Length: 158
Image 1 (cartoon, one colour):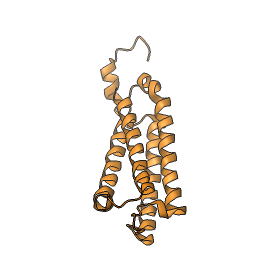
Image 2 (image 1 turned 90 degrees about the vertical axis):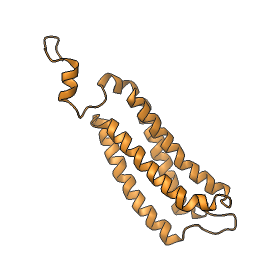
Image 3 (image 1 turned 180 degrees about the vertical axis):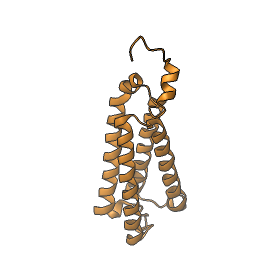
Image 4 (image 1 turned 45 degrees about the vertical axis):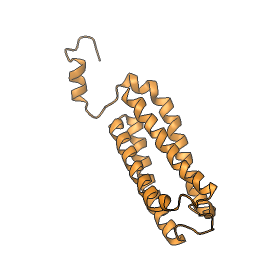
């Protein structure tokens, strides 16, 4: 913006409500957020790979019982992969254009927390004592992306 303009910084922000993160602040954290997003996507695709090709590691109890049958796991997987794809597209577009990025971060955190809490409540808490170590590892692989998204949000808020 030129120095001769009579528009104040506050007025400029009010005129561009879609740009919630100031450009200089966004450039400062852009690389960290991009790296975290790559780790998140990698972990999610690693989980998908394990669920599809090694289902014995996904929510299996010590007595070799699957907590979900194969049809339920695959149906849930298809629905969540669709949600994941939509979420990645929206998050990437928002990140690359810096449009509503703070709001998209909050929405992503809320959606992930809801999905994680639903799974914890329905599948995990009732069988926590009998889960195998790989199943517990798969559960923790869900908390890491949540923590990374929280770190992205905190960086954007500063």
